[in-house]
Image (tube, rainbow, N blue to C red; front, side):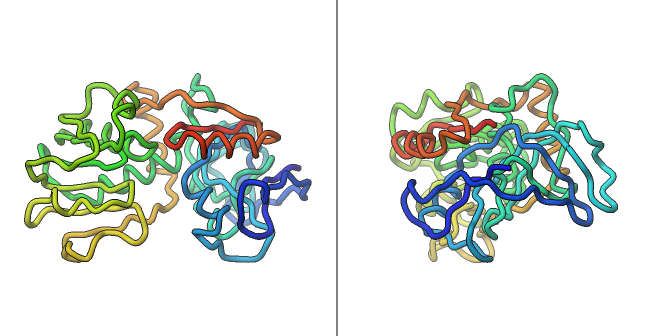
Length: 296
């Protein structure tokens, strides 16, 4: 089977499409034939050495997964062969990611894929969706709160805005450039701020871009970030949360239902095959913010 791997971090040319053995599912695991995945900022950080994966080389990249169950391991009973599933494997930081023809993943990390949704579109949901949902949960705010989301046009920020809106919060979007406004989901942002923080303070912030939002937060408000190295020191640790995304099939099921019901939308993406992995990464680097999906 093929797998997108690298021996040591570097620029795009370190990536290689290699022929490797098909894995066997272990206890509680499922073997999945991959249909589609996506490029996330974390993939680029791992490839370039900003994040150092654990384990030993070669390392396989990839977090997101859309595919079909081919086999199940001992005591894995939730999904039958032939079922279409979605999943997010945070094991990419260990060097065992999802960018391979077949992937073994715990069944507890999977959910049934919504029917009649293009795999290339659906591949944008798992990691960004889990990250956004866990960030919104971490706010622990009452309904009707004002929440500022930085990086609102990105994959995580875009979903976070929609989840905040669905929960009855007033979502405020912060984007870096004017052209990013058109990338925002329609009808969910109370206000859109371009390149500067709002004058009025908010009850909570979700930082997806790694910038200091503390000046926008009211005293006692909650600061949530999904970027390691944040939040800033000026924010009390009692009012700050760093979200490190964890795998959850139950959360993916809830997100998939929102997609099925039309309450959560995903943007169109530019699609490449895995044999075009270098071109896909070049496109991602040239157009930061554009969603790139990979299909078999």
